[in-house]
Length: 195
Image 1 (cartoon, rainbow, N blue to C red):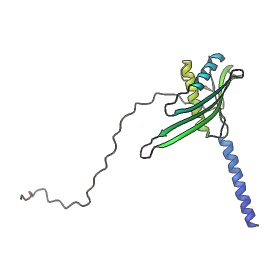
Image 2 (tube, one colour; image 1 turned 180 degrees about the vertical axis):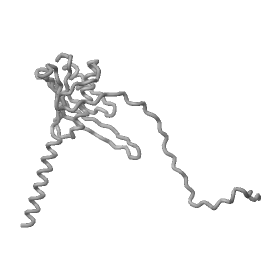
Image 3 (tube, one colour; image 1 turned 45 degrees about the horizontal axis):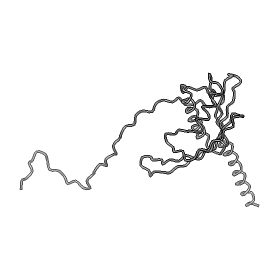
Image 4 (cartoon, helix red, strand yellow; image 1 turned 60 degrees about the vertical axis):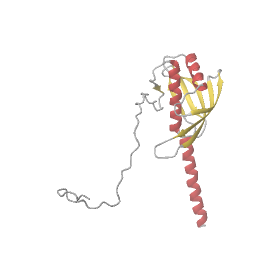
């Protein structure tokens, strides 16, 4: 009887944990309003950004794009790879696989077009937000627009893009040499004997 109770408690904990994880890392959507642009302009920018992605820190290994003109929806399967090098650690190979949908919609309150970026996989929401923000920035760049954005209510606002400071070369630290044993020094007032 005692084993069954312990088993049921562990099973209940596992089910609750699985439910919590599924709720927090399921399909995630990020939306952005594009005021002042027509649907055709945005659609063209969406397709161009999906078909020719740009990354500063990843290499695009695979980029399959399925465009549905009738529903104004794009499905993307993308594989990214990089070698991450951080100070004082060995280089690490990383690979990220993305499955996402981008859809053109309309915000009824603002009467402006919106673009919805939805991850079609279980992934940490912050990763999706970063990927969506990169996509929206690439769209705005192709539109020739400033990077200021109008987030949809309930969505986290996109970070303002500022130029990164110039990198500076920092020399590697030189280890301080400490002698193992230092003989006691002679008093400074007496001259050393000559040989």
